[in-house]
Length: 142
Picture 1 (cartoon, rainbow, N blue to C red):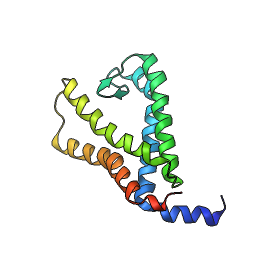
Picture 2 (cartoon, rainbow, N blue to C red):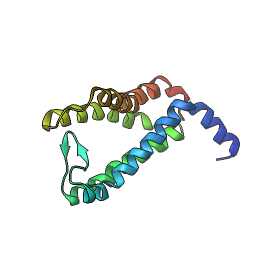
Picture 3 (spheres, rainbow, N blue to C red):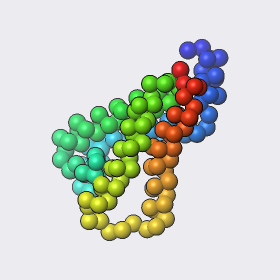
Picture 4 (cartoon, helix red, strand yellow):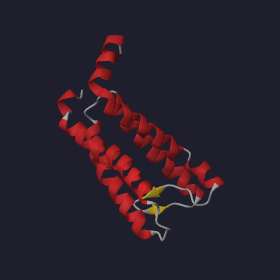
């Protein structure tokens, strides 16, 4: 990709999608390192559809799989690819379902209201907001 094409893609992508792609890379890194996180603290581990995986083997296999999905999603956003839309829609439904199931399946002390508001803002903006943005701007995707 030439520098002219690169700057064109970056200008099409805009600040919102740039920030979302970076956040997805951070989430992917977190998923890739779940096994190490779990080794240092038993309460950490990958959560899929509300179920927290506490066994090392589950974190070793599922963490990289989810990390690869998030990396490919971020790559598709970064390069403004149309193939990213189905994954974006899947992720938009997955994140809220995962949060609701996790909070309903686990008896945890309630977090502070400010934490809940911030967490929901970031997670729902990254999932639903990005999917909506991509769908409404799909003509700009390649």
